[in-house]
Image (cartoon, rainbow, N blue to C red; front, side, top):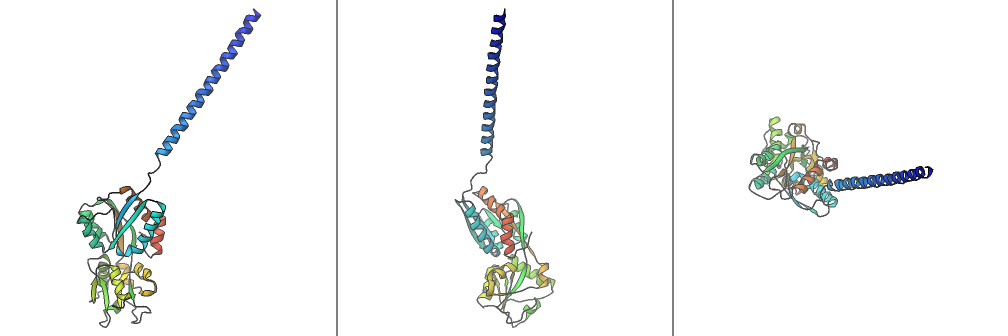
Amino acid sequence: MTRTVRRTRRMLQVTGAGAAALLALSACSSSDDSSSASDSSASGSGSPKLSGEVTVFAAASLKESFTTLGKEFEKAHPGTKVTFSFGGSDALAASITGGAPADVFASASPKTMKIVTDAGDASGTPATFVRNELEIATLPGNPDKVASLKDLTNADLKVVLCDKTVPCGAAAQKALDASKLKLTPVSYEEDVKSALNKVVLEEADAAVVYKTDVKAAGDKVEGVEFPESADAINDYPITLLKSSKNTGTAKAFMELVQSAEGQKVLNEAGFLKP
């Protein structure tokens, strides 16, 4: 009787140990499967690598800032290339609606952006990413002592404005109208860089341009602020275009422009926050 009891106890102990081992193995297997699934999920949720070329149509006043951001973007995403086409926003909008291939459009005014959205060429709703204010650019040292917008109406001064169809020209006209001033420039230029260049080359005594362009020109010109500029501040909208062939990379560039890093570059260039 005693031997039988002992044998039974021994069998139960062995059986219990085997069951515990099976449970341990099962737990390990379950844990491994869970870990494997988690790893798979984590790797699957990673954002795809950006690559390819992106073409950005941007207002001339964005040239310096966007060129800097383009280089930063390419450095952060090897294998990508950002190509820019800078010019008057109206001309760029006309090119886009005319079928020119581009991925992103950054305009110097909502009015010129509307040309693109009305034509159905924008993907999504444009977002304002910066604003810009006008300033008078004079020859270095301001030899003509220009101190106000009214001073530009002096018949002895050669003054240049952007064409009225261009955002900087429309803003200048708005400021003149707010001041009830009439100004006949020696020329209307196709974009803000062309207007500024007339002063740089001493072909004009002054030009009404953006603060950002005066700042970018350094000591080649001198800037004169005027209060009426507050009545003619331009919002700058940006949008993805339906013609984009590389939407992922295009969206990533737009995100950089609107990010804290992008805003820092734009603010340092003289742009105002949206």
